[in-house]
Structure formats: C-alpha cells, structure tokens
Length: 314
Image: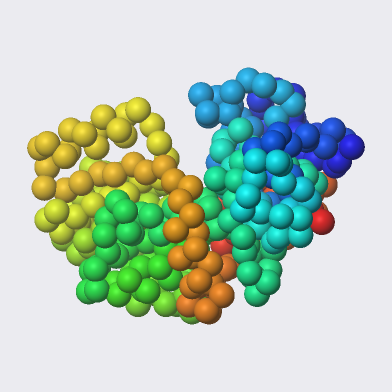
C-alpha cells in the first residue's frame, strides 16, 4: 500500500482524503516512479470540483495532480529509455496521479532531470513553466523589443512568464500587487503596475502581447491597450472564448488566443537548461507535506500564492 490523497466524488476540499491505496502495477510499457514532490496547480482543484469532467472522467478513487518529480523504481519490459534510479519529471494528464507515493506513467510523459535540479523545483515544469514558454514561443512568437505585459506576474505561471519574456528579448511590464513588486523586479520586469493603483487597460496601444495569468483580463476592455495585430492570451479554456477567438481572427486586427499546454520534451529540455544555468529562477512560495494537500488547495484557491506550491512526498 501507499499513502495518497484522493477523492471518491467531485466536490469541495472536504472530499479530499489522505489515506492508503494500492501501489499501481505498471504495465510492460509503463514506468513506476517513487514520487518525491508534486506541484499544486489551479487545474488540480478545478478537476476536484468537477469542472473538467470531460478530461478527468468519472473513475474513482481519483488521485489529483498533473506534474511530479521522483525516482524510477522499475521500468516495463517494453521501456528502453528509463532504468531504476533515474531522476525524472513526469507531466500527467487531467486524470492525475501525482498526489501519491508512487505513480505509473507512460514514458512519453517522462523526462530525466539532472542532479543539479532539486526535486521541489523539478516538479513545477509542465503546467506553469511550459504554459509560459509555449505562450511566448508557439502562440505568440516574442521577438527582441516586443512589449509584453504579464497580468498576474507574481503567480506560478507569471513568475516563469516574466523571466522567459526577458530571455526572448522583450520589454516586460508586470501587473501584481504592491507587496510583490520587489519579487517581479528581481525576476527582470522592466516596469511594474500595481493593480490597486492603475488599470493597465487604460494604456492605449501599448503592448504587442498580454498574457493573462490572473484570468481577469477580458478582451473587450483589454484590446484597447494592444497594438495593431496584438494578442491577448488566455489560459482558461471555455467554449465561449474559443468562439470569440475564431470570430476575432476573421474580423479584428487584434487576436485572442486560448491555450492548453502541450507536453513536449524539447520544451522541457529548454526549461531545464535555463533553470540549471541560472537564467530562470523557480519561485516556490510554500512546501507542504502530502497530508496537508487540503491546505495547499485552500491557499491556491485564494489567489495569493507567490510562485509555486509544492507537496513534498518522499
């Protein structure tokens, strides 16, 4: 048996159970990982609440958590790229599995991580890190001199986004509260807007791209501060946003892009290289034991986290 956090029906934090479940039995094409750390992301509690049933399904018990770091315990007979003792990162689907002492994962979702990358920081790559990276390299290709605004710059995605935009040569404006000004400046922001004192939407035609990591920049109000051809990138997928994005592509000089992160190993390698070299700093706000996953969800839901939240498991 193993310790895990799971729930037997969708609902609030009270549905989360810390208890014993069987250790998963990996198939011939899977890798069994002893989990060292699991990142806590807003998508985890959205899954728990039942907002993403089309992805997470209705099979219970359901263990949340979509990204983790740990050590390979064993590899199936069909697995060639991993062996016992390898230090790895795994990015899972919305079906979860990371909030547990062990997980069985497909090798396509796993990448080795170097000894220089601690497990805590190494558990944060797929959701926050790759979301920010892919926003600025796949969906809007940031070029040197571009004006980039990161809304929610002190959060998990935002702290990555500020640094990645700077690496790509942009001038970065960060939106956060006054108490987080020093943090985002230290990460490289050229200008900081305190959202309690100024509404960035009132800046006319100022930005080439806006990454809305705070989920409160809506297109009708935000488009006025975009330059011609500029893009607003949203992270919260919905049917209404997809329809609006298609419409704007046909009839507007501005663009709205709604993105879902893709698990691409070349992007993970890029992030790992820049973290190990010191060009990207992983900002971790709080580390919790697995038994305190409810408290981690409560803090994540508050919207006050500075950087990442992580569960330390083993």
